[in-house]
Image 1 (cartoon, rainbow over the protein chains, first blue to last red):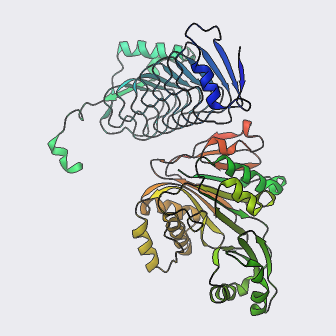
Image 2: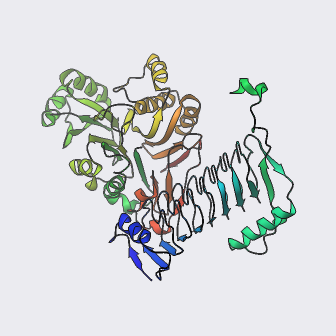
Image 3: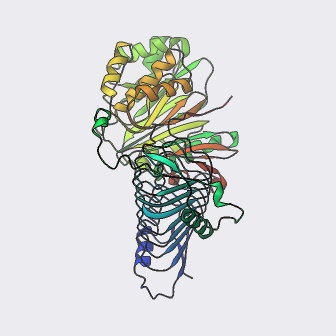
Length: 229
Length: 295
């Protein structure tokens, strides 16, 4: 198992080594030590490897991820797993703002809390937050699922197109055109599968969650609202 | 961009290390602000005396004539382009007047019982070195690394800004209504030394405090009156406060242990602190005032 000490090897060199791996590489488990909050670690991976980062990371960790599994053994800065396409990113601490922003696929699991704008403009990613999420989360979400075991901050799902937002705790307020819906059977199955994939205790029941989604009133321009713009 | 840092010590045993820790924190924020750097350190107060921080040249020839004019000895410490004068509190107004008349070439950039304030153009490491930040001691300090957007890269435009006794402000962001707020404050008698938007925020808070508001209430009122992007860290004689704008446009992370409370624009800024690995790390919520004070 390659162990990379970021104090010895710079971030660019590390990312270069990871990018150079072929899809048939035997070096499938990497360990990164002394990250010290540096930005853009393990970005742009496109190989089925696992990268464990021993500590807190800065901005855009595991951005644009494809295929790889990236585990952060600490907190993540702004934009973790931004624009992820596939694979899995697991943050064992808290995540800062815009976690999983614009991500198209894959699974983002955050064991702690995520702050503002979690899942902003999400486009198909699955996000499971075991703690709470901050204000303006899932802003303009387009597709995918956001699961929150704790509470959601103000203006959840503002201007949402489509996406399923499952929240177990309190929602401080819903954003424009985000509405509560009835939990459907297929959604219960999706939720159970996501909870299992994220390693959530079986004791957590899907019936404890409420689901929120698009009211679909903003899809078309409404002349009666012209004065509001 | 811009980087801001703050460190408030709970454990007196850390006080000798305040400057060294802040210096390292500032340097971690070089990427966010390579244009200029500055910091305010809250050190020991001397009973009955006020510290005036002055910036300029020919600083060795200030204390003696000022002392003669006041009829009282004036203690002075020169650090590169800055001079900290310690004057008897009752003579503070006379000292300010003497400085304005006899040494109009100098800028008075901070005053208070405990505050000392230093700022210069250059990389944070260079600025820290020039002023000997690593040797400074005290209870709390705030610092700033600047990437200029709203006004020129000059020492005048560097943070912190101090517009009241022992008060200072560092700002990450930009204000959009600073011209109109400035005009209102000028009518209220608030003086500004620069064209900088952040100085308007400092002046606004000083004006509210002068009207009798608590620091917390002054910051809450700023949410209604200041428009733009901001994370503020505000220093006062006994502590500091943090406020982010209502959409938390600018980053902020905090760490708290039994020994200190620390603020950084990014987690990286906090990595030099002892015990950071096990500190409680959290992000301040938007539009919520956080304040720490030492009794």
